[in-house]
Length: 215
Image (cartoon, rainbow, N blue to C red):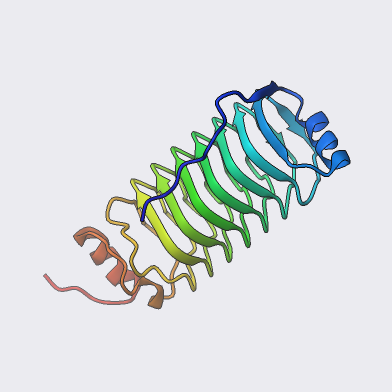
């Protein structure tokens, strides 16, 4: 399955004022569209059901912000600090997070479609009950992530850190963790059925499940 890339317009409107742009879109009941947000410093925003289409966030920082139930279509986040941002119950379609800080960010109950995370630091992010359909994690730190009860239709994990990630009740069949660091992952056992791992990982997981291995 090919993960689709964002479809961006060649000439986006540049702005550093996220708040004013958001207010205008809410007033006019329109999408926030065709905008390049560059270097925005956003603090204390609490807004639901925002719709972003054909946008780039470049070097932006969101502090103490929440945008639940929002939608992101054809959007790129590049080197943004989205730590602890509440994005619960949001939908993502053809979205890229490239070199972003996502520590503690909340993606609970989100629908992630054709979404690519590249070189992101997402320690302790929350993906509880998220739906993943065409999602790639490439060289990301997902240590301590809450990834319980996710539904995975198609996902790729390459060279990621999943140390201590909580994966209870998330079926991992068809996934390949062989290039990842999965030390200390938290599972009940049944989740591992159909998961591809390397030989060393298999030994570690067998001990996790209480098996004794003799030389």
